[in-house]
Image (cartoon, rainbow, N blue to C red; front, side, top):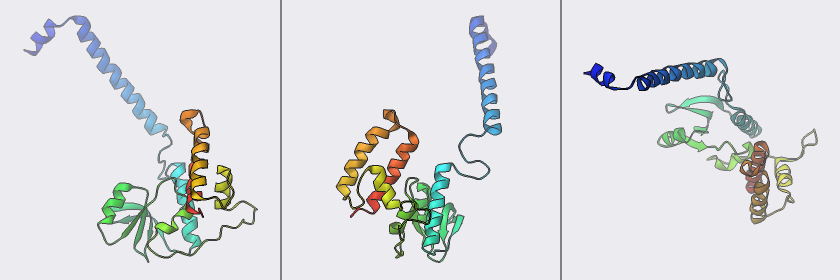
Length: 200
């Protein structure tokens, strides 16, 4: 019966279908070789993309600054988390699914967005954290709050409404959809998050 169906089809249709299948196999093989031999920006050799790596560095610095013990890439309640605070039984994760699974356990989960600066982690933790000094470091760099306000073009004492207004204006200039630069856009978003955190 199968041969009768094939016999009823025009030869050009059969040839086209076979050629399409052959080309699909070749393209799939090229993609497979390309992905395995030349990995892109994703995780490589167990390292995460640079944005998450930068955020992990900031969180690590913050936890060190407040003197909190932590374990990285820890396994909690069947989920891998970015940081685990063993003395507090707190899991810090970038993964929303892991957050909701851990939430059902005795461990306190903290969900961290990739845009959240490390210094903004304190208010999300379920325990009192010491106030971290934001003074200039030995290299004379601005503290995170001053730097954030500078990016938004605001004085350090600006209120929340001023911060929101400045952010909206700045985004119009730097958003990639409006011809802006992706890195500059990320910098403005980070500045907004930091400035909001320290709004008077």
